[in-house]
Length: 242
Image 1 (cartoon, rainbow, N blue to C red):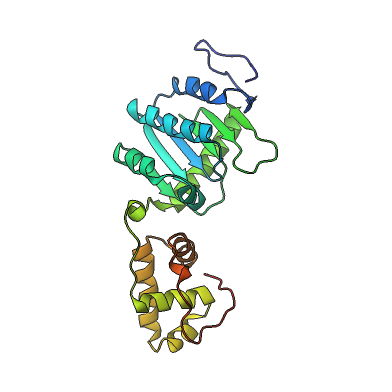
Image 2 (image 1 turned 180 degrees about the vertical axis):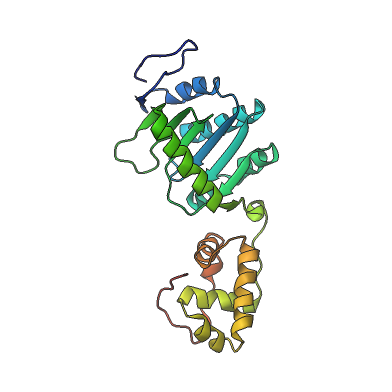
């Protein structure tokens, strides 16, 4: 890591400094954790494929929880899809607050709103990590992380359980959503009232633990519920999930 002016505790006093991901930047982050006093926010949108960085993330969170810090974890659906769920469940049981959001956000670790680490994810042409102590940028990072947190939903409780079982009617409703049919057309196709059709959609949101029709599609795809044969008479155009 490049060196800049430090305070009496050896922490970076101000500004922005770039980490070298070719070195041992995880050790630099661990040194920062010794200065965490109250809280940490860990937001991962684009997960890296590096096992070293995955281990870093788990160790960082475990260390913070063990030290009695308040920990908020914000993840994208891609993160949940690409990672072992058991560490998340364990961290949740230890007191970590975990949410999932479809918002587009940056990988960031924020400690006590006084220091942050930004880093690139999988597929980056030029991997990078930055240590930030610039007050204006820190405020912006924390505000955006807070807004993304508020827009998210809780960690799905079924991530450690078996497959979700849907009735034939629920699968038929799911099929009309996949086709992108408007509600009136979908209700007529399934020979039910508009109110009943929308009630089934609300039930799907509850069953899949999501908050929008778009999220129904994302969650259904993750669970393999879209692999079922199409309903008789269904069109083949792509759905909008809106």
